[in-house]
Amino acid sequence: MSFTVAGQTWIPKTAAEYAQTELDYINTGRASRGESALVASTDNAIWLELLAAGSLQQAYDEELGQASNSFSPSLCVDDQVLNLLPIVGTKLIEATFSIVDISVTAKAAGDAIIPAGTLAPYAGINFVTNALTTVPAGTTVAIPSTASASGPYTCPVGGITKFSETITNVLTVTNLTFSTTGNLTETTTGARRRIITGDTRQWGINACIRALRAINGLSAANVFFNPSATDNLVLPGPITIAPRCAYIVVKGTAYTGEIANAYYDTMSAPLNAGGAHTDYYVTQSGQLIPVLYDTATNVNTYVRVYYENSNATTAGFDTNLKQLVVNGQSGLYPGVEVTSQYFSELLAGFTLCTITGITVSTDNVTFARTAPVNGNQFPILDTARVSVIGE
Image (cartoon, rainbow, N blue to C red):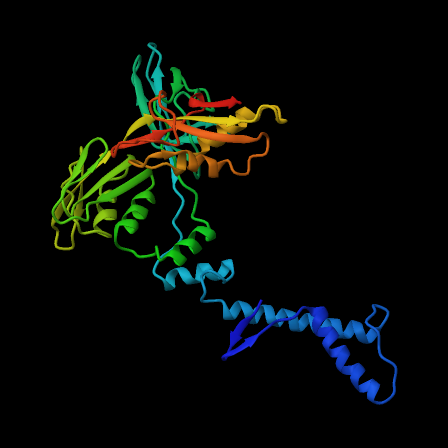
């Protein structure tokens, strides 16, 4: 390791190297006087003093190196990355919470009253009902609920089966739709990567995508922009985007104004590619600007993981594999094809078997390294659609 200070290259040494340099200097003087050389030994008090001084010098070098690297995103320490974020005009992308609609059916005998904050357990966490809800006798009502902890918690259809407490007149509790998956707070490594690649601007397409994905209640979002001034851009579906226009597609729901604010705070291109939903951006002059967007429909995604069945495996490895694949839901986005490479990277550290290959499909017929996804579709994973195959 070396660094430059005031135009001079400084090569730090270890504590032992500094101590040895000083000892050599002392022995040179002793030799000139005809005295015997001192030996580097823990039995030698002078050597122990030199080691202590060397340790101080090594610590100073390390701090000096950190100071020299403090404005180098690729070399600085993690704490300094956090200091660099406001300098380059960005911040850590905040965590969001998974949400799901809990369908509650009331008995014919009477209404079921579900208090706000009622807990529905699933896989080590709870989904918490957002508001007091009355379910009329003999009917079913979907109650919006939010995970008790932020992060990419996924709950498949039917994953919720009960509330933590017994509530009068409740007949059944379940979820009829897949949860909208949240996200963890961006890691320092992720922020460092964005700084290095220059992906820190608070405007433009990437900034808009980041702003949309940071909205609580949206598990995924994408913006597609047509840079051509003359030709249409056609996404699979087909979805036609006119020249110099953009198309928004999201998964989940957001409060009124959030999608529009995320778009017009970062982009100014028109949105004439259509969309089934409209949000409104309110300017400081009070003008209402409509923002069209689509909510992605689910497309079932199938994954086949192949392993070497002649090699040793660990009991339950297939169950673990399937769960790891499904945990990759948070890395899938609307309108983006599914690739075997994504799952290969996701399973790179798996040691319970020898993985030999992965294929994917969105029709359960054609399996290949990539699987097409329409511009307004969102690929959905489930352990029931993950196959672990020995070969």
